[in-house]
Every structure is written in C-alpha cells, then in structure tokens.
Length: 226
Image (cartoon, rainbow, N blue to C red; front, side, top):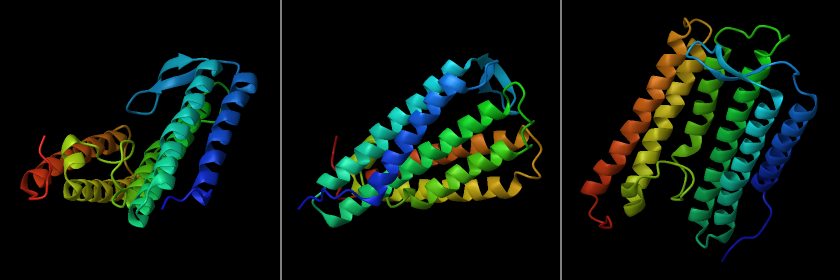
C-alpha cells in the first residue's frame, strides 16, 4: 500500500526549494554590485571572481538539485509498498536536505563573506561548516534504503542488499567521525592544512566505502550476478 500523505520532510523540501529560489532572486537583483568570489583555493581564498548573476545562477541550481534529489526521494518513498523501505527512503530525503542545505549555506557564506566590503571571514569557519555537513549527513546515511540518488551507489551495492547496507553504514560512520573531528579541530588547525586533511579524509572514506561494497558483494551468497 502506497502512502501519498504530505509529510514534514515534504514540507521542508518545499521550504528549502522556495528559500533557495528566493535567495537566488535577491542576489540577482540586490546582491553585491562588485566582484563576487566563485572559486576558492585550499586556504579558502578566492582564486576566481564573477558577478552576482553567476552566484544567483549557482544558488538557483541548488534549488533545482533539491527538487530533483529530495523531491525525488519523497516521491520514491510515497510510492514504496513496504513500510521499512518507505522509512529508508525518507531517511534518504532527509540526507538530501541536510547535504544540499548545508552546501548552499557554505556557498553563500564563502561568496558573500569574501565579497567587496564584507567583514573578513573567521579563520577555520569554512572547515567547521564543512565538518558539520559531513557529521549530520553521516549520522543518517547508514539507514538509507537502496535508491538511485543518495548513498554509496555502486554497481555491486545495487546487486546485493547486504553490500548496500554495509557500504552505506561504513560511509556514514566515516563521514560522521571525520566531520566531528573537523568541527573540533577547526579553531586550532592551521589553514590550509586543516581543510586539505578534511578533503583527503573524505576521498579516502568514499574510496573505502566503494571497495567495501565490492568486497561484500563478492562474498554475499544472495548477490545478483552481472
């Protein structure tokens, strides 16, 4: 039996889409008139500049991404027959909201705090915000049901439910603890070394989770062949 109720997560999805669209419109009309940083080096210093229309387009793109990922996960959940799968897909919707919402906040902070006339950003804040995003998303990632939008989506994970569950639980734990360590270390870590360590840690965690999905699939007696 499917569930077509409009849930709290659906409401939050609509709010985030509307908020990002409104932010994009405001930036396009009344944002900084001078150059706006659009890309940053490892030390979180701008190395490419654009204008407010480019930043507005980027935030508008984040609104579209919210509609596709969080909105799509909500649609999958509403159509799911099994209650356990429905719950797992709703968790995926939550992870989408946390990841895209957090990334949007990070983009807005980085661009607007470095724009002409803005107060200088606090050292290590970018590392702390990045760590917070990974901590909160990692806390829920291991409970996401199989889907094409969120999680460790390897060919092996789609051919083995055990591989999906274990690789996503591993990724969730790694991202959570990496994020916690980044938040704790942010006030003291020298930059750009701190943010570089976080980026390298994320890449290692992602690769480890991919390998885990293959390893579990290979030993799963119930796996589906290719």
